[in-house]
Image 1 (cartoon, rainbow, N blue to C red):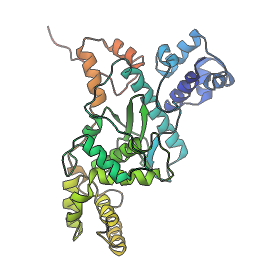
Image 2: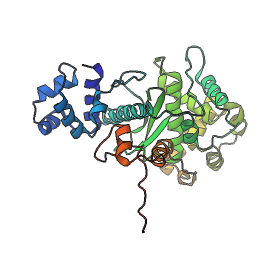
Image 3: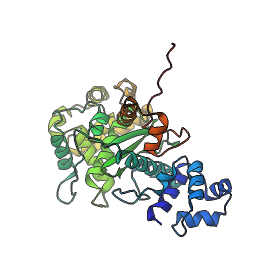
Image 4: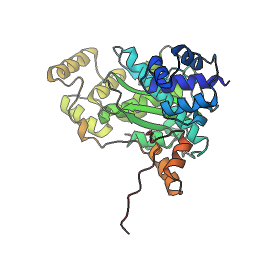
Length: 347
């Protein structure tokens, strides 16, 4: 039996947010039997694989597929979350990320992407996060200054970006590799400024921490994101006289929060610790610590790559059922790759 089958079942069940007992009852088997399947102690026969696929919304071929991905299927994903996030929430979201990376890997083995750019791998012991960010910008030949539509740049490197409602505001995003491509999943409730910083943060993880483990991974991803979105040599001259009005103008220019801009100024030695404390007192007194004004005025950024793959398959003449088979889903189980429904025309 493939060692991957048990991991696939475990991830799919957790992503569906159902317990072993609930799934076992649905299948008409004991919880102990299901546990043996998930722990690769017993191989389900063809009939049971069909039932498992029906219950979990995937094809039998998907369950039995030999996934060849960087890192184990059930491996921990890189995650941008608050320390107060509930384990049950981030484990559920993590399972969703792993499910999406399986579907991405499954499809992209059959329908290869040919991205314009690539996510490079950088050893954080040899290069600082800021140097890594500069290397990525140079490799992608990005213009100097603010990044216009960071999601589009990341998608240009073959990264599948997906938005989902996490059911909690304490988790911003997650990322993980899926074969030769990566998946970033964002909390759909994020305002644009926070979304952009989260994408850059997760890109930092993919660049710095996919092959190299570091205890300071979160801080390194933050440093990467700051340099990627706000290159020091460009923004530093602007970080003077940081009144709330000036910060609001900079937010419009750079597409990140006032907090991110002030933190950038502080880290670059352009603002003192006393000024930083005063700034946060101002935010708190206005109730802006969690939701700043002006975020809704920034140009919206939404993922397009996954849906474009579905459109290409649709334009190639494949039926909805054929596309679902390529993705590994069944019974209309939605995925980010779904092709838009063709409208009916009167004859």
